[in-house]
Image (cartoon, rainbow, N blue to C red):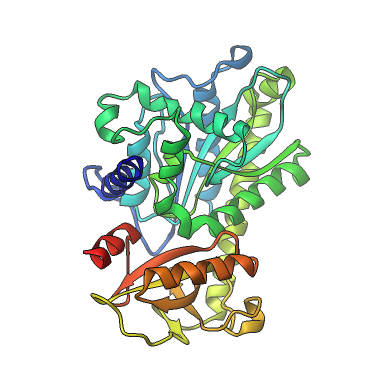
Length: 368
């Protein structure tokens, strides 16, 4: 019964993610690289108030400065989830990014803790590896209780429940590699350039990241509860330095994609060495083992000895799949094999007549 409720929640939240009640920014231009910047909290939600500082104000100032720096590149379009002190529902923030068909979603926050913890950390969506990561996600997700009709908007999602947090992870898995790449660049800028304490790239179940269908990260720029760090983040100098690091990381991420795309002239979606197998209802399951900006030959030596790897170009990113079968039990075996070969974060995806579809829908079709 619990599994049924989780699947129902995931199905509902995926539909919610793609609904169309947000008005799109009229300036959106998909010829450009679109970055959506999200200042955490706002309005009647101040965020944490460590040492008397307001997270909502600091996050907004940092985000506006990041946007100002990015706009200097004529090939980048910047969209904000908020530009002033207003409260924006978490699901609306994701909708703004989805409606803009964004290439990146970056949410900015400030941390807090009862100890003398300090330093920067950048999160991507994923299973909470430990209780600390879960507590950080729980704190940020609890914002939904300030929203009107949150029970309806989040279909029973409970920020205090590890099961609920686990259930939101399915629809963002395919962007995990790109998200980690951007998060790593941000942390490197903080550490190498600003000499901030590096708390690393981490995974946790942030619902604001789940709402998006593009590479997404949540940046914890430091701890307001640590007096020295809170003072730094509240200062103009600190905000400018943090903003510059985030902007430079985004530019480096974009440039790495541009370089590889320009070096590889194929247009549209391409599948290479696609195994040919009859499918049930036109549905085929594959195991996604990797994704990145570099086009690799689909030879076993590039994929730890795995044979039958195919490649798909999806926008700026090349995705690599192992196997192709209409038999779900068989694809589970191939997923386990890929994991044993070292692809621990591999996951199953489904296609119908060559088009990507939600795994949940594919399973419903093949079991009927």
